[in-house]
Length: 450
Image (tube, rainbow, N blue to C red):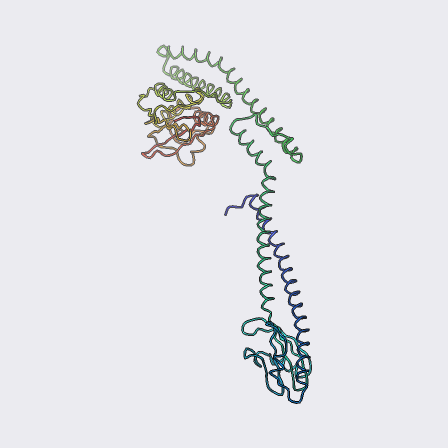
């Protein structure tokens, strides 16, 4: 399971924190509002019930009271409904309520002479029931509807829920905004690191961008400067050693050439030894040339308009191969690349196919719509095993197929140079299986116009 990124985690933390805080405040506000509304309505209902009970007591204080008329004389409005219990009978202004609506426990309390209040539900609606004893045989009950209070509480709950969701969303937006600005310096560091990897060693961070990140910027710039010094020192060392070796190698090559030409004047063992020495000196010369090329590989690419198809044909001719192997699609594509580097790429790929796969079967050139030039060299050899497809482009590493061929004398730097030249152009070099069998080396170089 992939772990969420830092920005996502911080944004989620802000959102959850804001939601929890808003929910806590909403629950507290909801409970406080509900209690306040119910308590206020209860106090008002009790006052009104006692007043109405006094009116009913006055109306009943006659020899022959008309109970129905007494109940009609009570001004209860539409929110309150009176109910009278007298001498075992129940009296109401309408048939909507009766004795069944009054809980038995509350009836016993009122008959015992104690006023009582209880919240009930009648006909599915919330109500407040107030019982007032008028005499040992008479009790007055008044139902006060709490529907309006319940609707108000529901509206408050919905409002607080919406506010909590909005606060959570605001917290997420704040977290995203905060992380965006907080991570901007790290993004700048990542971008600078990518440019350095691409070969732009002049990349630096501005220490004045953020006073709080001055130390990070300064340390990063110091690290890059140290890296540049090490790379430059290693490059100069490789170049100096290679140049210093050229002179003695040329002398050895001249001497070996003399011995090679006079092989018939030597005995068989001496002639064999002379041939081995000549071969090793030739291999040593190629190694020195490749090292010098590697020392120059990290320099910026000098782009110009190049006829890559002509370079591909030259590479084939240099290996004694027919020019018909080169196939260019679409025709007329303009490549703006470093001529020397692309020529080296083509030559190394073709030579690699000759040495380890019996020669190339096709050299294809194409230009994608996004401006990427593609070089593909196919061979019909054994292919490159999956574990070797990354390491074959590493310096001094030779694939299993190369080791399996005893007659090869490669230096292990040809494909490394291909990858280096591709990287300097901002491209890459990969190897895959050829559909018909064998290997397909593919080099992508940005800078092509279809």
